[in-house]
Length: 442
Image (tube, rainbow, N blue to C red; front, side):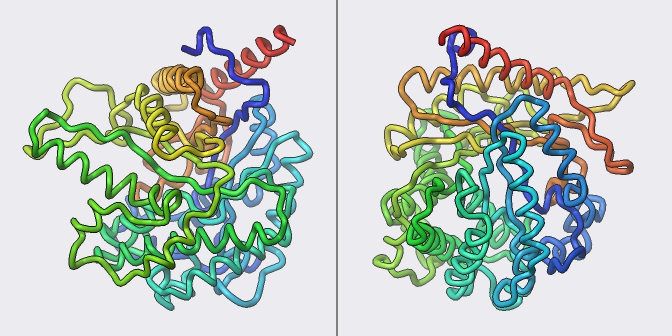
Protein backbone atom coordinates (compact mmCIF):
# COMPACT_ATOMS: atom_id res chain seq x y z
CA UNK A 1 0.00 0.00 0.00
CA UNK A 2 1.12 3.57 -0.49
CA UNK A 3 2.04 4.10 3.15
CA UNK A 4 5.08 2.02 2.26
CA UNK A 5 5.09 2.19 -1.54
CA UNK A 6 7.34 4.78 -3.16
CA UNK A 7 6.12 5.92 -6.53
CA UNK A 8 8.99 6.09 -9.07
CA UNK A 9 10.94 9.33 -9.41
CA UNK A 10 9.75 9.79 -13.00
CA UNK A 11 6.09 9.15 -12.16
CA UNK A 12 3.86 11.90 -13.57
CA UNK A 13 1.59 13.62 -11.10
CA UNK A 14 -1.06 15.70 -12.78
CA UNK A 15 -4.62 16.92 -13.17
CA UNK A 16 -6.99 16.73 -16.13
CA UNK A 17 -9.59 18.98 -17.73
CA UNK A 18 -11.41 19.26 -21.06
CA UNK A 19 -11.96 22.21 -23.36
CA UNK A 20 -15.75 22.57 -23.38
CA UNK A 21 -15.99 22.04 -19.63
CA UNK A 22 -13.66 24.89 -18.67
CA UNK A 23 -12.70 27.20 -21.54
CA UNK A 24 -15.84 29.24 -22.09
CA UNK A 25 -15.28 31.97 -24.72
CA UNK A 26 -17.60 29.94 -26.92
CA UNK A 27 -18.07 32.73 -29.45
CA UNK A 28 -14.69 34.43 -29.08
CA UNK A 29 -11.83 34.76 -31.58
CA UNK A 30 -13.47 32.81 -34.36
CA UNK A 31 -14.48 29.63 -32.57
CA UNK A 32 -17.30 27.82 -34.35
CA UNK A 33 -20.24 26.20 -32.57
CA UNK A 34 -19.87 22.65 -31.28
CA UNK A 35 -22.52 19.97 -30.86
CA UNK A 36 -22.61 20.87 -27.16
CA UNK A 37 -23.48 24.48 -27.92
CA UNK A 38 -26.36 23.20 -30.05
CA UNK A 39 -27.42 20.52 -27.56
CA UNK A 40 -27.53 23.05 -24.72
CA UNK A 41 -30.12 25.04 -26.67
CA UNK A 42 -32.52 22.08 -26.74
CA UNK A 43 -35.11 22.46 -23.95
CA UNK A 44 -34.70 20.02 -21.06
CA UNK A 45 -31.37 18.55 -22.15
CA UNK A 46 -29.06 20.28 -19.64
CA UNK A 47 -29.98 20.62 -15.97
CA UNK A 48 -31.07 24.18 -15.30
CA UNK A 49 -30.81 25.06 -18.98
CA UNK A 50 -27.10 25.76 -18.48
CA UNK A 51 -24.28 25.70 -21.03
CA UNK A 52 -20.54 26.04 -21.49
CA UNK A 53 -20.57 29.51 -23.01
CA UNK A 54 -18.57 30.93 -20.08
CA UNK A 55 -17.80 27.84 -17.95
CA UNK A 56 -14.64 28.59 -15.92
CA UNK A 57 -13.46 31.23 -18.43
CA UNK A 58 -10.19 29.32 -18.70
CA UNK A 59 -9.70 30.86 -22.15
CA UNK A 60 -8.93 34.14 -20.40
CA UNK A 61 -7.72 32.82 -17.02
CA UNK A 62 -5.38 30.10 -18.28
CA UNK A 63 -2.25 31.66 -16.77
CA UNK A 64 -3.86 31.72 -13.34
CA UNK A 65 -4.94 28.10 -13.78
CA UNK A 66 -1.47 26.94 -14.83
CA UNK A 67 -0.07 28.77 -11.80
CA UNK A 68 -2.46 26.73 -9.65
CA UNK A 69 -1.18 23.46 -11.14
CA UNK A 70 2.42 24.53 -10.67
CA UNK A 71 1.66 25.64 -7.11
CA UNK A 72 0.36 22.16 -6.31
CA UNK A 73 3.79 20.76 -7.17
CA UNK A 74 2.45 18.75 -10.10
CA UNK A 75 4.49 17.80 -13.14
CA UNK A 76 1.88 17.20 -15.86
CA UNK A 77 -1.37 18.60 -17.22
CA UNK A 78 -3.87 16.74 -19.38
CA UNK A 79 -6.06 19.06 -21.44
CA UNK A 80 -8.07 18.86 -24.65
CA UNK A 81 -8.17 20.93 -27.81
CA UNK A 82 -11.49 22.29 -29.06
CA UNK A 83 -11.87 21.16 -32.68
CA UNK A 84 -14.31 24.02 -33.52
CA UNK A 85 -11.86 26.54 -32.04
CA UNK A 86 -9.14 25.32 -34.39
CA UNK A 87 -11.22 24.52 -37.51
CA UNK A 88 -14.62 26.24 -37.02
CA UNK A 89 -16.35 24.32 -39.84
CA UNK A 90 -14.60 21.07 -38.92
CA UNK A 91 -12.80 20.97 -42.26
CA UNK A 92 -11.19 23.55 -44.48
CA UNK A 93 -10.19 26.98 -43.18
CA UNK A 94 -8.07 26.92 -40.04
CA UNK A 95 -8.64 29.56 -37.34
CA UNK A 96 -5.19 31.01 -36.49
CA UNK A 97 -6.47 32.65 -33.30
CA UNK A 98 -7.63 29.26 -32.02
CA UNK A 99 -4.24 27.68 -32.66
CA UNK A 100 -2.57 30.73 -31.08
CA UNK A 101 -4.45 30.04 -27.84
CA UNK A 102 -3.14 26.47 -27.59
CA UNK A 103 0.32 27.68 -28.58
CA UNK A 104 0.30 30.08 -25.62
CA UNK A 105 -1.15 27.43 -23.33
CA UNK A 106 1.52 24.86 -24.18
CA UNK A 107 4.32 27.40 -23.87
CA UNK A 108 2.87 28.38 -20.51
CA UNK A 109 2.98 24.76 -19.35
CA UNK A 110 6.56 24.30 -20.45
CA UNK A 111 7.63 27.53 -18.77
CA UNK A 112 6.19 26.18 -15.52
CA UNK A 113 7.81 22.76 -15.84
CA UNK A 114 4.53 21.04 -16.73
CA UNK A 115 4.38 18.23 -19.27
CA UNK A 116 1.57 18.80 -21.81
CA UNK A 117 -0.64 15.74 -22.39
CA UNK A 118 -3.07 16.59 -25.18
CA UNK A 119 -6.44 15.01 -25.98
CA UNK A 120 -7.59 15.64 -29.54
CA UNK A 121 -11.25 14.78 -29.01
CA UNK A 122 -13.12 15.27 -25.75
CA UNK A 123 -16.64 15.31 -27.21
CA UNK A 124 -16.95 18.82 -28.71
CA UNK A 125 -17.47 18.00 -32.40
CA UNK A 126 -17.96 21.03 -34.67
CA UNK A 127 -21.68 21.40 -35.29
CA UNK A 128 -20.95 21.93 -38.99
CA UNK A 129 -19.75 18.32 -39.16
CA UNK A 130 -22.79 17.05 -37.26
CA UNK A 131 -24.87 18.72 -39.94
CA UNK A 132 -23.07 16.41 -42.37
CA UNK A 133 -23.77 13.28 -40.33
CA UNK A 134 -21.04 13.57 -37.70
CA UNK A 135 -19.64 10.29 -36.44
CA UNK A 136 -22.14 8.36 -38.59
CA UNK A 137 -20.52 9.70 -41.77
CA UNK A 138 -17.53 7.60 -42.93
CA UNK A 139 -15.85 10.77 -44.18
CA UNK A 140 -15.24 11.76 -40.57
CA UNK A 141 -12.25 9.42 -40.47
CA UNK A 142 -10.44 11.76 -42.87
CA UNK A 143 -11.84 14.91 -41.28
CA UNK A 144 -10.48 13.86 -37.91
CA UNK A 145 -7.08 12.85 -39.26
CA UNK A 146 -6.71 16.21 -41.01
CA UNK A 147 -7.68 18.01 -37.79
CA UNK A 148 -5.12 16.00 -35.80
CA UNK A 149 -2.37 16.86 -38.29
CA UNK A 150 -3.35 20.55 -38.11
CA UNK A 151 -2.88 20.50 -34.33
CA UNK A 152 0.36 18.55 -34.59
CA UNK A 153 1.75 20.91 -37.22
CA UNK A 154 1.46 23.81 -34.76
CA UNK A 155 2.24 22.14 -31.42
CA UNK A 156 4.52 19.33 -32.57
CA UNK A 157 6.81 17.57 -30.15
CA UNK A 158 6.38 20.16 -27.43
CA UNK A 159 3.54 17.81 -26.47
CA UNK A 160 4.52 14.83 -24.32
CA UNK A 161 1.57 12.68 -25.40
CA UNK A 162 -1.25 12.84 -27.93
CA UNK A 163 -4.45 11.00 -27.10
CA UNK A 164 -6.85 10.51 -30.00
CA UNK A 165 -10.14 10.05 -28.13
CA UNK A 166 -11.43 10.46 -24.62
CA UNK A 167 -13.96 7.77 -23.64
CA UNK A 168 -15.34 6.83 -27.08
CA UNK A 169 -18.03 4.77 -25.30
CA UNK A 170 -19.55 8.05 -24.12
CA UNK A 171 -19.49 9.57 -27.60
CA UNK A 172 -21.15 6.52 -29.16
CA UNK A 173 -23.48 5.28 -26.43
CA UNK A 174 -24.46 8.43 -24.52
CA UNK A 175 -24.42 10.62 -27.61
CA UNK A 176 -26.02 8.33 -30.19
CA UNK A 177 -27.95 5.58 -28.38
CA UNK A 178 -29.16 6.84 -25.00
CA UNK A 179 -29.16 10.44 -26.22
CA UNK A 180 -28.12 11.93 -22.88
CA UNK A 181 -25.09 13.62 -24.45
CA UNK A 182 -24.72 15.69 -27.60
CA UNK A 183 -25.80 15.27 -30.33
CA UNK A 184 -28.74 13.61 -28.55
CA UNK A 185 -29.45 10.81 -31.05
CA UNK A 186 -31.27 7.70 -29.83
CA UNK A 187 -30.52 4.91 -32.27
CA UNK A 188 -28.44 1.82 -31.48
CA UNK A 189 -27.33 1.18 -35.05
CA UNK A 190 -26.11 4.76 -35.39
CA UNK A 191 -24.24 4.43 -32.10
CA UNK A 192 -22.49 1.26 -33.28
CA UNK A 193 -21.62 2.92 -36.58
CA UNK A 194 -20.19 5.91 -34.71
CA UNK A 195 -18.06 3.59 -32.56
CA UNK A 196 -16.73 1.89 -35.73
CA UNK A 197 -15.77 5.20 -37.33
CA UNK A 198 -14.09 6.32 -34.10
CA UNK A 199 -11.92 3.19 -34.17
CA UNK A 200 -10.95 3.82 -37.79
CA UNK A 201 -10.19 7.47 -37.03
CA UNK A 202 -8.02 6.44 -34.10
CA UNK A 203 -5.96 4.04 -36.20
CA UNK A 204 -5.60 6.34 -39.21
CA UNK A 205 -4.57 9.23 -36.96
CA UNK A 206 -1.86 7.20 -35.25
CA UNK A 207 -0.56 6.20 -38.69
CA UNK A 208 -0.60 9.83 -39.85
CA UNK A 209 1.15 11.15 -36.73
CA UNK A 210 3.79 8.43 -36.85
CA UNK A 211 4.46 9.38 -40.47
CA UNK A 212 5.52 12.79 -39.10
CA UNK A 213 8.30 11.03 -37.14
CA UNK A 214 6.91 12.47 -33.95
CA UNK A 215 8.75 11.88 -30.70
CA UNK A 216 5.52 12.35 -28.73
CA UNK A 217 3.79 9.36 -27.17
CA UNK A 218 0.65 8.27 -29.00
CA UNK A 219 -2.35 6.51 -27.49
CA UNK A 220 -6.00 6.70 -26.55
CA UNK A 221 -8.08 6.98 -23.38
CA UNK A 222 -10.85 4.56 -22.41
CA UNK A 223 -13.31 4.57 -19.52
CA UNK A 224 -13.06 1.09 -18.06
CA UNK A 225 -14.84 -0.73 -15.25
CA UNK A 226 -14.63 -3.95 -13.27
CA UNK A 227 -17.92 -5.77 -13.92
CA UNK A 228 -19.19 -8.07 -11.17
CA UNK A 229 -22.23 -10.35 -11.19
CA UNK A 230 -24.51 -9.80 -8.20
CA UNK A 231 -24.83 -13.57 -7.58
CA UNK A 232 -23.41 -16.85 -8.81
CA UNK A 233 -26.52 -17.49 -10.90
CA UNK A 234 -25.93 -18.33 -14.55
CA UNK A 235 -28.12 -15.40 -15.59
CA UNK A 236 -26.09 -12.87 -13.57
CA UNK A 237 -22.78 -14.35 -14.73
CA UNK A 238 -23.82 -14.18 -18.38
CA UNK A 239 -25.22 -10.65 -17.99
CA UNK A 240 -21.92 -9.49 -16.46
CA UNK A 241 -19.90 -11.03 -19.31
CA UNK A 242 -22.13 -9.34 -21.88
CA UNK A 243 -21.90 -5.93 -20.19
CA UNK A 244 -18.11 -6.27 -20.00
CA UNK A 245 -18.07 -7.01 -23.73
CA UNK A 246 -20.29 -4.04 -24.60
CA UNK A 247 -18.59 -1.44 -22.39
CA UNK A 248 -14.97 -2.52 -21.96
CA UNK A 249 -14.00 -4.96 -24.69
CA UNK A 250 -15.94 -3.18 -27.45
CA UNK A 251 -13.27 -0.47 -27.20
CA UNK A 252 -10.28 -2.52 -26.04
CA UNK A 253 -10.48 -5.28 -28.66
CA UNK A 254 -10.28 -3.03 -31.75
CA UNK A 255 -7.35 -1.06 -30.32
CA UNK A 256 -5.39 -4.15 -29.27
CA UNK A 257 -6.67 -6.86 -31.66
CA UNK A 258 -8.33 -5.12 -34.60
CA UNK A 259 -11.68 -6.83 -33.97
CA UNK A 260 -14.94 -6.34 -32.11
CA UNK A 261 -15.73 -8.90 -29.36
CA UNK A 262 -17.84 -11.77 -30.72
CA UNK A 263 -20.14 -11.90 -27.69
CA UNK A 264 -21.24 -8.29 -28.22
CA UNK A 265 -21.47 -8.62 -32.02
CA UNK A 266 -23.79 -11.63 -31.61
CA UNK A 267 -25.88 -9.71 -29.07
CA UNK A 268 -26.31 -6.68 -31.33
CA UNK A 269 -27.37 -8.97 -34.22
CA UNK A 270 -29.61 -7.06 -36.65
CA UNK A 271 -28.56 -3.72 -35.13
CA UNK A 272 -24.97 -4.20 -36.30
CA UNK A 273 -24.09 -1.81 -39.11
CA UNK A 274 -22.11 -2.97 -42.11
CA UNK A 275 -18.46 -2.98 -41.14
CA UNK A 276 -15.36 -4.11 -42.97
CA UNK A 277 -13.37 -6.52 -40.74
CA UNK A 278 -10.23 -5.90 -42.79
CA UNK A 279 -10.65 -2.14 -42.46
CA UNK A 280 -11.14 -2.40 -38.71
CA UNK A 281 -7.63 -3.85 -38.36
CA UNK A 282 -6.25 -0.33 -38.82
CA UNK A 283 -7.44 0.43 -35.27
CA UNK A 284 -4.81 -1.92 -33.82
CA UNK A 285 -1.84 0.41 -34.24
CA UNK A 286 0.94 -0.02 -31.67
CA UNK A 287 0.23 2.14 -28.62
CA UNK A 288 2.87 4.03 -26.69
CA UNK A 289 0.37 4.22 -23.83
CA UNK A 290 -3.18 3.42 -22.87
CA UNK A 291 -4.98 6.00 -20.78
CA UNK A 292 -7.45 4.59 -18.26
CA UNK A 293 -10.31 6.56 -16.72
CA UNK A 294 -11.59 4.79 -13.61
CA UNK A 295 -14.53 5.93 -11.50
CA UNK A 296 -16.57 2.94 -10.31
CA UNK A 297 -17.51 -0.66 -11.02
CA UNK A 298 -20.64 -2.20 -12.50
CA UNK A 299 -22.56 -4.63 -10.30
CA UNK A 300 -24.90 -6.65 -12.49
CA UNK A 301 -28.18 -8.15 -11.33
CA UNK A 302 -30.77 -9.62 -13.68
CA UNK A 303 -33.29 -9.32 -10.85
CA UNK A 304 -32.79 -5.59 -10.36
CA UNK A 305 -30.90 -5.86 -7.06
CA UNK A 306 -28.73 -2.92 -6.04
CA UNK A 307 -25.68 -2.66 -3.83
CA UNK A 308 -26.73 -1.68 -0.32
CA UNK A 309 -24.79 0.14 2.40
CA UNK A 310 -21.99 1.44 0.18
CA UNK A 311 -20.58 4.95 0.12
CA UNK A 312 -21.49 6.85 -3.03
CA UNK A 313 -20.44 10.08 -4.72
CA UNK A 314 -22.79 12.92 -5.61
CA UNK A 315 -23.19 11.20 -8.98
CA UNK A 316 -24.60 8.14 -7.21
CA UNK A 317 -21.53 6.08 -8.11
CA UNK A 318 -20.23 3.50 -5.67
CA UNK A 319 -16.86 4.39 -4.18
CA UNK A 320 -14.79 1.27 -4.83
CA UNK A 321 -11.04 1.96 -4.54
CA UNK A 322 -10.05 -1.69 -4.92
CA UNK A 323 -11.48 -1.49 -8.44
CA UNK A 324 -8.47 0.44 -9.70
CA UNK A 325 -6.20 -2.38 -8.53
CA UNK A 326 -8.36 -5.10 -10.06
CA UNK A 327 -8.82 -3.20 -13.30
CA UNK A 328 -5.13 -2.49 -13.85
CA UNK A 329 -4.09 -6.04 -12.96
CA UNK A 330 -6.63 -7.52 -15.39
CA UNK A 331 -5.73 -5.03 -18.13
CA UNK A 332 -2.03 -5.76 -17.87
CA UNK A 333 -2.73 -9.46 -18.17
CA UNK A 334 -5.19 -9.32 -21.08
CA UNK A 335 -4.30 -6.10 -22.90
CA UNK A 336 -0.63 -5.42 -22.15
CA UNK A 337 0.55 -1.95 -23.12
CA UNK A 338 4.08 -0.55 -22.79
CA UNK A 339 2.74 1.92 -20.24
CA UNK A 340 -0.52 3.03 -18.70
CA UNK A 341 -1.61 6.39 -17.43
CA UNK A 342 -4.52 6.85 -15.05
CA UNK A 343 -5.87 9.72 -17.10
CA UNK A 344 -8.92 10.36 -14.91
CA UNK A 345 -9.85 9.39 -11.37
CA UNK A 346 -11.94 11.56 -9.10
CA UNK A 347 -15.32 12.19 -7.55
CA UNK A 348 -18.11 14.74 -7.27
CA UNK A 349 -19.34 15.72 -3.83
CA UNK A 350 -21.65 18.42 -2.50
CA UNK A 351 -18.82 20.84 -1.73
CA UNK A 352 -19.57 24.08 0.07
CA UNK A 353 -17.37 27.13 0.42
CA UNK A 354 -17.42 28.23 4.06
CA UNK A 355 -15.27 31.05 5.39
CA UNK A 356 -13.03 30.81 2.35
CA UNK A 357 -12.42 27.07 2.68
CA UNK A 358 -13.83 23.80 1.34
CA UNK A 359 -13.49 20.84 3.68
CA UNK A 360 -14.00 17.90 1.31
CA UNK A 361 -12.89 15.03 3.54
CA UNK A 362 -14.72 12.47 1.38
CA UNK A 363 -12.63 13.43 -1.66
CA UNK A 364 -9.43 13.27 0.37
CA UNK A 365 -10.34 9.71 1.38
CA UNK A 366 -11.25 8.90 -2.21
CA UNK A 367 -7.85 10.02 -3.52
CA UNK A 368 -5.86 8.44 -0.72
CA UNK A 369 -7.59 5.07 -1.00
CA UNK A 370 -7.39 4.92 -4.80
CA UNK A 371 -3.70 5.82 -4.77
CA UNK A 372 -3.08 3.07 -2.22
CA UNK A 373 -4.64 0.49 -4.50
CA UNK A 374 -2.87 1.92 -7.55
CA UNK A 375 0.43 1.57 -5.72
CA UNK A 376 -0.48 -2.02 -4.96
CA UNK A 377 -0.97 -2.77 -8.67
CA UNK A 378 2.36 -1.13 -9.48
CA UNK A 379 4.10 -3.16 -6.79
CA UNK A 380 2.79 -6.23 -8.58
CA UNK A 381 4.29 -5.21 -11.88
CA UNK A 382 1.70 -3.08 -13.69
CA UNK A 383 3.61 -0.34 -15.60
CA UNK A 384 1.60 2.75 -14.59
CA UNK A 385 3.58 5.90 -15.37
CA UNK A 386 1.28 8.69 -14.29
CA UNK A 387 -1.87 9.74 -12.45
CA UNK A 388 -4.13 12.63 -13.51
CA UNK A 389 -6.75 13.59 -10.96
CA UNK A 390 -10.14 14.60 -12.38
CA UNK A 391 -10.44 17.47 -12.18
CA UNK A 392 -8.42 20.57 -11.51
CA UNK A 393 -11.51 22.80 -11.45
CA UNK A 394 -15.19 22.51 -10.73
CA UNK A 395 -16.66 22.78 -14.21
CA UNK A 396 -19.50 22.21 -16.65
CA UNK A 397 -20.51 18.60 -16.02
CA UNK A 398 -22.25 17.93 -19.32
CA UNK A 399 -25.94 17.04 -18.90
CA UNK A 400 -25.71 17.99 -15.20
CA UNK A 401 -24.71 21.57 -15.96
CA UNK A 402 -22.90 23.10 -12.98
CA UNK A 403 -24.69 20.99 -10.36
CA UNK A 404 -21.86 18.47 -9.84
CA UNK A 405 -18.48 19.57 -8.52
CA UNK A 406 -15.54 17.33 -9.46
CA UNK A 407 -12.74 19.85 -8.88
CA UNK A 408 -10.02 19.87 -6.27
CA UNK A 409 -10.24 23.64 -6.80
CA UNK A 410 -13.59 25.31 -6.04
CA UNK A 411 -14.90 27.73 -8.66
CA UNK A 412 -17.34 30.50 -7.84
CA UNK A 413 -19.06 30.74 -11.21
CA UNK A 414 -20.29 34.29 -10.53
CA UNK A 415 -16.85 35.74 -9.83
CA UNK A 416 -14.60 33.02 -11.31
CA UNK A 417 -12.67 32.99 -8.03
CA UNK A 418 -10.64 29.81 -7.52
CA UNK A 419 -10.19 28.34 -4.02
CA UNK A 420 -8.06 25.32 -3.16
CA UNK A 421 -10.15 22.64 -1.47
CA UNK A 422 -8.68 20.48 1.27
CA UNK A 423 -8.27 17.74 -1.36
CA UNK A 424 -5.98 19.98 -3.43
CA UNK A 425 -3.85 20.66 -0.36
CA UNK A 426 -3.77 16.94 0.47
CA UNK A 427 -2.76 16.04 -3.10
CA UNK A 428 -0.03 18.70 -3.05
CA UNK A 429 1.32 17.40 0.25
CA UNK A 430 1.16 13.78 -0.91
CA UNK A 431 3.13 14.56 -4.06
CA UNK A 432 5.69 16.56 -2.08
CA UNK A 433 6.06 13.65 0.35
CA UNK A 434 6.73 11.29 -2.54
CA UNK A 435 9.41 13.65 -3.84
CA UNK A 436 10.96 13.78 -0.39
CA UNK A 437 11.12 10.00 -0.26
CA UNK A 438 12.82 9.97 -3.66
CA UNK A 439 15.34 12.58 -2.59
CA UNK A 440 16.21 10.57 0.50
CA UNK A 441 16.83 7.47 -1.63
CA UNK A 442 19.26 9.22 -3.98
